[in-house]
Length: 105
Image (tube, rainbow, N blue to C red; front, side):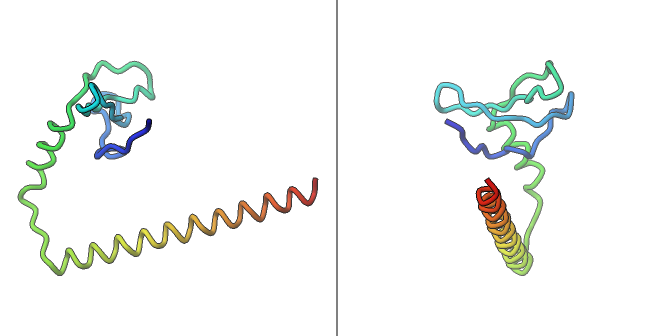
């Protein structure tokens, strides 16, 4: 079963630069480790709670005004709508290509 982890695609290994990937241990603890995409990496795993605390320490002093929050919300919604439209366009294009190939066969 594949799961979306909180930090998926966000954190790179400090040793080799590969992305960290999440694993669940004992069906309740989430750990992140190097993906080893460039070969064996000596860096140990890190618990998700430790990463959350590090992010909390970094982002704690950040204050977002209502105006900025509203702008960010609208920008994210617009971005999501654009991604969905691009995806739908790609699907339509691929379906047309598939239909053309079937006709040629």
